[in-house]
Image 1 (tube, helix red, strand yellow):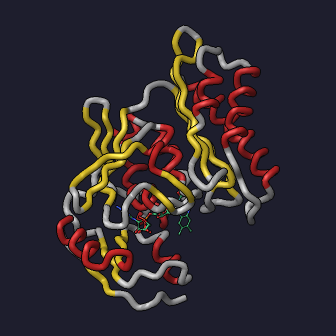
Image 2 (tube, rainbow, N blue to C red):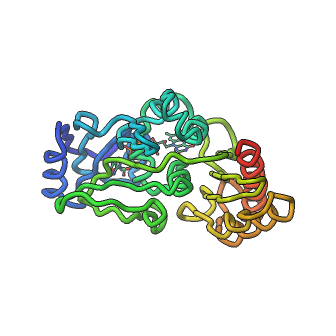
Image 3 (tube, rainbow, N blue to C red):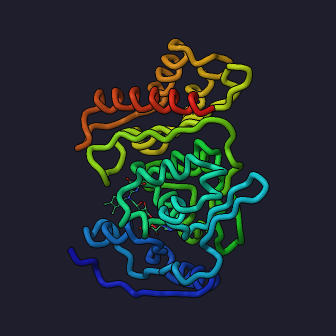
Length: 284
Ligand code: FAD
């Protein structure tokens, strides 16, 4: 498995990245941790004649937790997320989810920017970002713009990002209340068969607000507004959880593949969401 020949660029600032993107258009792509792109190039599923390495570009890494708002630079690795105690205090679901991605070797290299920009339905961060109602910052030839994670994903590997734009950061309000990230996978290091991100706040014994997103159960992550609404105002009795699970099943659209047939995936989604809701509620 050897990739096709490519030109390698290593700019030190964003202007240098954008210049190569502008010059080569579709033939150029950025590389972050390389743990999705390099395998695709080796398998000849991606042909990238001009490869722009982001690792020396200033200002793309780091985690800032400032007055309840979290900003994470695109080149921040999954390992950086796991070991950051202020992030774990502000948004513990980030550590819980990151620990379930792949294995330590991948997490040392895989970045949050690569994970959310890739558009792979199997990636864990896109659903997590939708659950957190995160915003993505993109920079391109016309300057900077922001997009809600809930509006970013269009189809498998298709996002709202233009070919000449680079994702520079993700940001979100530090979540309140209980949280859980639950994932069913075939073995350690695997992508999800089904995963659920859940946030719940509780007031006077009732659910005041909820957010639910599912991973690898459609060609995009699924933020299920209907599932969350089924919980709000209830004390999360069995009927409310069953209604939330039924609403989620109405929103997902899994397909048969080597992780199992559709009926198995719907069953896995049911179990995983129920577990995530119960855990989030117990922590709320
Ligand atoms: P790269 O591979 O460098 O890039 C991926 C794509 O995103 C490319 O198209 C690239 O051009 C684009 N891109 C990267 N950064 C930017 C940016 N800043 N702006 C615009 N475009 C950008 N992931 C999971 O979520 N869950 C798993 O369980 C999981 N298991 C894995 C198991 C294995 C064995 C491996 C090899 C990978 C696994 N991954 C998993 C994927 C891993 O987390 C990847 O590293 C991650 O998805 C992509 O991040 P990256 O930094 O490596 O991106």
